[in-house]
Length: 315
Image (cartoon, rainbow, N blue to C red; front, side, top):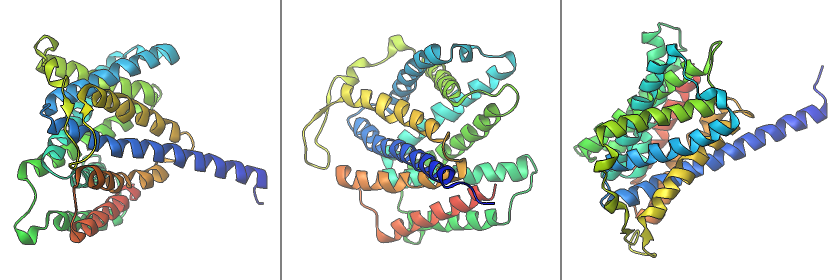
């Protein structure tokens, strides 16, 4: 028995809306990489910028949750340790290490390495939880390793910055933990909604940075300047304005769009759109920051993303 045409049309519209919402969020995330790098190149430190991003996003999300879902502000005794780990490692370390990586390497390459996170998640499922995964995960892992070798151009003596690569892989591992804890907190009888989970993740990161870098020692002067011309052209832009964009348009809005999109499409469909972020970020960085990939690196990036996609689908 076939579904009514009206039902099929409604499902198609919902799917199209989900893709549109997620693609919009992906575009903002991709653009945010260039915004962040411009701020970092002006002299602002990666730790300082990570603290500002997490704190600003937490304040906005806290207000949204307090208005829309006030009950979600309560933290149950069993979950505070996981939420703290989610914020400190999953959020703050992912952001901080990613910022270090893009400060020392092209944005697209840093994102390609960071996007290997789903592979580490699948490996954790296989060897940490001892659950079955499909054989295609090994093909995905092999493709990712080959692609990374192409991106790094290892036959030329490893052309990428060593610290930048280490930071990008660190960000990938932190992001993998972000996924693992987030999946745990989103399931079960006392599952958290995505909005409050994101808020408390940012809250844990805010607390971490407030301890590491107390606000009374914070260097506000470093945000009072302007960003010099990007790629040698264009007007100078105020750092404070770019920082505000990073918090609102580069963090809160795309997270909200991604969460809304998952009401219309599933995670497998969303992962396909997510894979476009390194490509979009690379194009933006090429135009704005004059960051250019070699053809081999471009092909390597495609191979990495194909491997990640296979590994993710193997779940």
